[in-house]
Length: 162
Image (cartoon, one colour):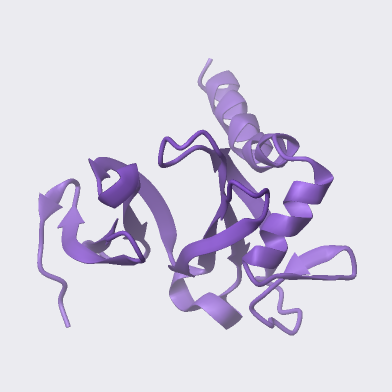
């Protein structure tokens, strides 16, 4: 029974990026990657400039959903590897489809974004940026950019150790 549950969870996690990309047309996928600063090289989307190290994983669209309630999709694009992203091993970029059909880079960085229930200007969710450690930055949309709002761990305030 445990093995079956583990298999189902593993398959769901592996399928998520594939399903997320299926929500966009090929034209929108390409436009989202370009807006995020990626280029198509050898059939793979790349932005960080990894020379092909063993830990590298090319860009993929992990999530497609309307984050801010405007009726248009946002896409979370990730790329992996320690060459570009250190011990965290992952970088992300969030792009948003605009009313004119173009895509716009909203924010990005090193880490694993988690969308929180708390919100900034225009209904954009706060983003906890995970990675190694126990005290993570939370960024909030101020109407122009995501900026540091606080640090937290398990939903409780904390102070990062320097």
